[in-house]
Image (cartoon, rainbow, N blue to C red; front, side, top):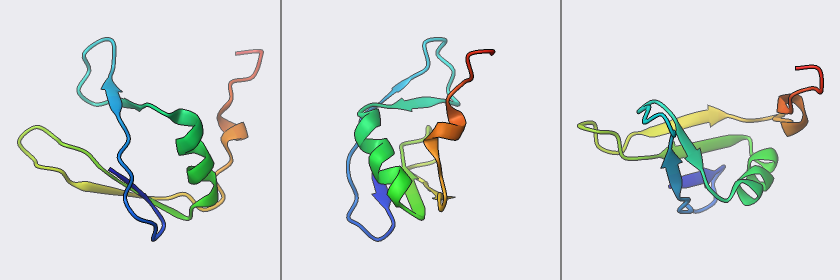
Length: 75
């Protein structure tokens, strides 16, 4: 579940890493997620964590700019 600012929670699907790492998940529906992320100041994500329930992770996203995270052609 993902909540942008004070909007209602939205269910996003996610998949685990190809290497079976338990520390990373990839949110599906990236373009929709990104559109909401760039407009939000706070994002809260809740996911099931083995033997920990479903904690809520809160991120300050004010000023987030996806263009800063696009690898340059030189990398």
